Length: 75
Image 1 (cartoon, rainbow, N blue to C red):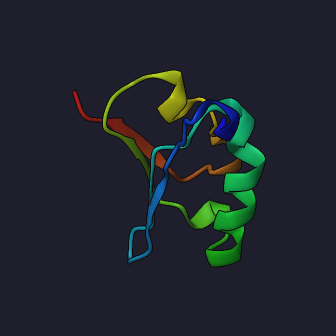
Image 2 (cartoon, rainbow, N blue to C red; image 1 turned 90 degrees about the horizontal axis):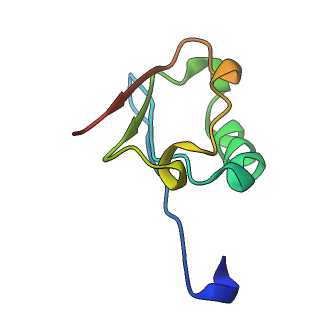
């Protein structure tokens, strides 16, 4: 999306309950998965969170690869 001047940011909290905040759009999943796997195994991800519910925040997560993660969104 850099061609359009748009960026997407994800945040990862690595503590006793690892949390990913925002997944980015669906086309970013492979990159996000690759980066997360460098830090923790996906099955250890505890939470996936978003500040609101739109595809640019949630579209990039294949939840079945993170079977123990709970999801929540701020409203």
